[in-house]
Length: 156
Image 1 (cartoon, helix red, strand yellow):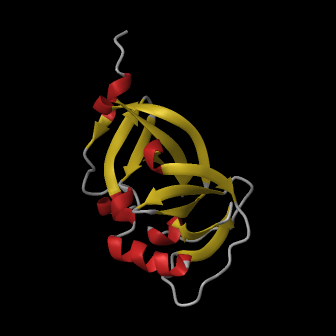
Image 2 (tube, helix red, strand yellow; image 1 turned 135 degrees about the vertical axis):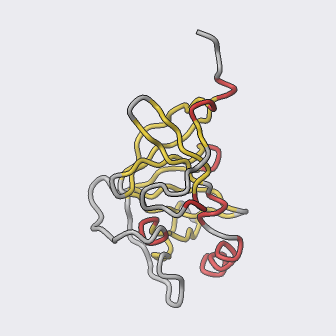
Image 3 (tube, rainbow, N blue to C red; image 1 turned 180 degrees about the vertical axis):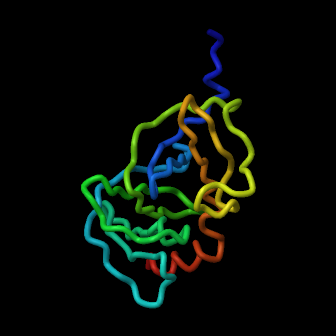
C-alpha cells in the first residue's frame, strides 16, 4: 500500500446533535472535561462564559447554539475542545469527542449546498470514510474575526 501520510489530514472527530464533525489537530490544543464556566454578561448568546484553564482565561463557545441547534443537557461525555483562533484559545462545547484519525485528502469533497443542520459557511468539506460521513469545520468561519476580537475583551 503506498504511503500517503503527507496527503492525510489528522483530525479530531467529535459529535454534535448525532452528526460527526472533524477539526484539524493543528488547531486543537486539548480536549477537556466539562468544568465550571463563569458567565459573562452582555456577550453573544452562544458564548457560555469563561474558564480558567491552567492559568489562562479561556472563552467557551456552545457549538450547538453557534450552529442554531437545540440546546441539550451536558452529560458525562460532553467535552470542551480547546482550539487556537487568531492568537488566543477558545473552548468549544461538543456532545462527545472521539479519537484522532487520518483523513486521506482524496476522501474530502467540497461542502454541498446543504449539510444536515450546519450552515455551509462553517464547512471546509465533507469526508467519506467507509460508512461514516465527517463534516470538516473551517474554524476561521465558525467565529469571524470580529467575534474573536469581542472574545478577547471577554478574555480580559
